[in-house]
Amino acid sequence: MFVALALQSDLTGFMVCNLLVQLAVFAAGACLPAHRTGFMSYVDVAWPWGLALIGVQVLAFGGLDSPVTVATAAIYLLMGMRMGAWALRFMVFKRLPGELPRYQYQRRRWERDGFRNEKVSLQVEIMVQCGANITVLAVPAALATVRPAGLDAVSVAAIALWAVFWVFESVADLQKARFADRTRRDGVRRTCDAGLWRYSRHPNYFGQWMQWNGLVLLSLPALIDRWPHHHIVFGLLTALALAWISWTTYHMLVHYTGAVPAEYFSRQRRPDYIRYQRATNRFFPGPRRTTHQ
Image 1 (spheres, rainbow, N blue to C red):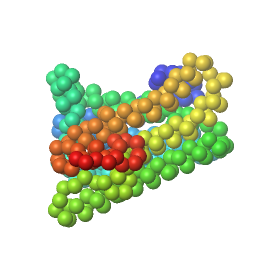
Image 2 (cartoon, one colour):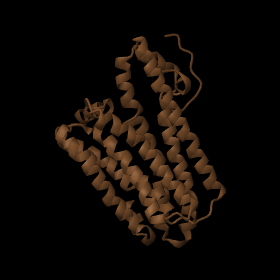
Image 3 (cartoon, rainbow, N blue to C red):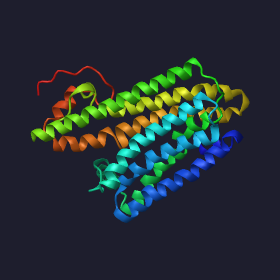
Image 4 (cartoon, rainbow, N blue to C red):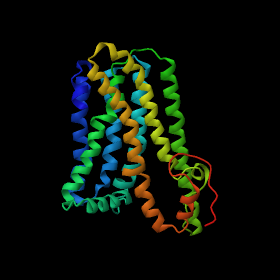
């Protein structure tokens, strides 16, 4: 996928520059700290700041003339800086107290799959996320650097979709933070089932997934515009890459570092979580189910 994009002359500069930027960010922000401490959690610093830097590169290569280019850059910047600021605050300024639960769960996968060298496994897992920023997650950004200047109906709808679900994710995080503060003051440990959390066990993850789908939609006009001017193989691989964004982010947010690892520990730590699981959809928001246990 990387080669197919980099071989398109108008995308070569962006793809090569992003390759070097992401390798530098992940080496300094995740690989070296992981090697020194044994914590994979530092990838949560490198990954979002890598996204933010994709936004900076979109502006550097695409300029400020196209509203779609500016909108795409802003989306990467807002998504990356929002997550990156939390990661810096929690893991750097407050000092990471230990491995995050989702990466504790990852070690169980390594055991199950027979991986015995933890130092190597740490670096491989970090580079998987680095590879995502270099390839599939950078495709909308690359296309935005060569996008025509005008806004069309699809672009407006895509930007609106992204904005709605950026607010959706932010509201979900705020509701959970307030719920956690309230239960902490009351001295109880309860599962958050307030607001959006009544309809999905992970509304913040769902909101993030829909934001990526908004970016895919924003990229479709550029894909269609370029189709007659490039070899069909390049066009098909670019289209496949856009479709893969939706699948990759869904897999990440549900199975890889999202819902499944989080719920493994939630079931152990909160007695009411099993009942919450029975009553509430895991990912897609929907009506609560009646449960008698």
